[in-house]
Image (cartoon, rainbow, N blue to C red; front, side):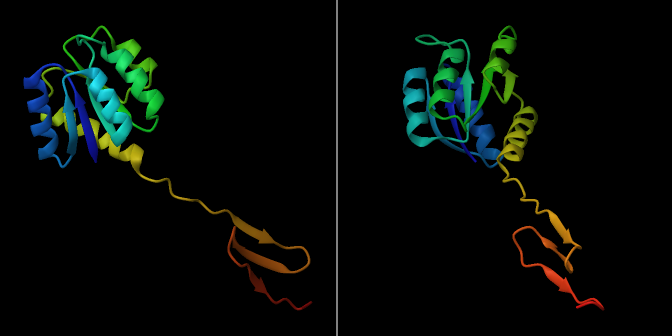
Length: 152
């Protein structure tokens, strides 16, 4: 899984990157400036962006909106010191909202949730049975199996 970090605090970036690497997540970039992070997210299209809410220059909610507009398939995870932005975070479709300091166990739950969302959906074929004009059975998109009856 490819992740990006946007947080103005160097220590948070270092801790997150270490924890993510330990659980098998590749960090493609870490940015202290949200505008630079938005530009790089647009170019690299990471699967998940960990984003602080309270930052100078631009707040994380606005940064998330811009990332979401340019990279609609990218999961957004907010990491913040405050629990007062939860409603806004989920309004824009955030995958998760984590309070600092983030434990490795809590981070693993978030990554597992993101991985589940990324799994391709299994295609379900419909079973088709025809009983008029002869008996046939098969799955949609596949050749039917024909049964010979006493009438055929």
